[in-house]
Image (cartoon, rainbow, N blue to C red; front, side, top):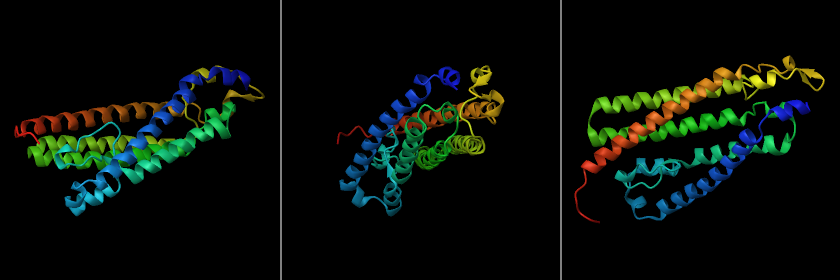
Length: 236
């Protein structure tokens, strides 16, 4: 068991995860501040009920401010973002506190990890769907809107497939290096179920992240182009 624990890079796995949760928590504070600022602004009183209802669940989509055209400072669902932050903290708490120094638990998959992916997929679907609608309003070009819509749905599908695999499998790493360790204390390496099954999940995760980058880059650059062309030249 000790040899297995030494094979796992804690700095490159749990350490990076802990740092990510710290940064995520700081940005979540910005999320709440942005939501509070929006509701105290005069614009919140004049926005349509549909947009106001959207912002009722919406908060800052971290490091993304694409909704300038409709004067909305908020860009992701606050309720989902709060739940997302909660399950991320739950996962890290399990690995770093409840199952601390347990190598078998380090390679296990906590239910909150695929749940986090599902919540993030819903956030991206709603936000990118709204931005795709804004893109259509600005450009009136169906081919651009269609491409953005297809990419948005593809991003949601790959993330959902990744999460489903996470619920089905009980480990988080492909861990070929772990399989080379023959004795795991008193248990052989074969006693860890589905240890190789995470490899397809890793490929799906990479595909989902790649599609997400392409989708949001395409939408953001296209919106920036049309917003730039619609400038009036008048200073506020």
